Length: 188
Image (cartoon, rainbow, N blue to C red; front, side):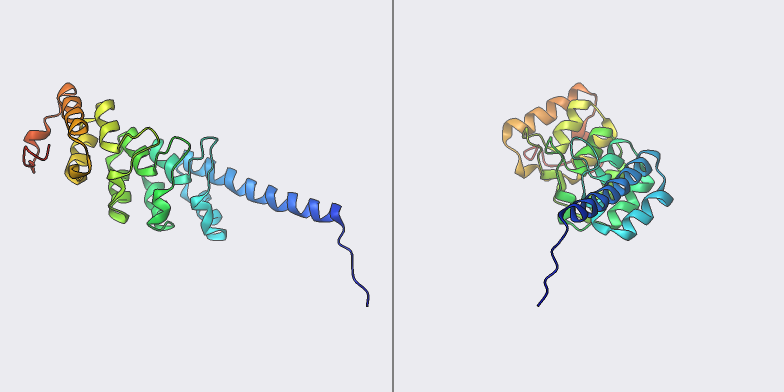
């Protein structure tokens, strides 16, 4: 019986080539998301659907994180189609989900499309214990605060957190108590 010995150099070169191809695809995806070029992003995702869940930045943002932060709304809509609910819980190095990143950027439309796919995202906090509505309130984005106020179950917050959200909204001139669907004052 003759057994063939694997050439370690050839094997290492093959692994480097595969890694280089994957890295190249992720770079294409990164550039496509930044520029909002779905025609460049789609072939990468068709070839490897899991690329939608991989980190493409130094802080481990996924393509959807990056789309949310850069307000690439059209590409965010398409990326969500490649993701499962659990994929939307992926956090970057700061513990931020893509939904949280949408709250940071103030892009309500991206927040809506992500929320429609997975509605528990408003309660997921980052590694510093901050929720999307708390961050939006701290940043003073009125439209995002109003949207998050409508969808965030405040029962998951401590009294002090609710008071901080209320104070932040007052400081930004957002009157959440006069929202189109006012909540019970006890809930706020």
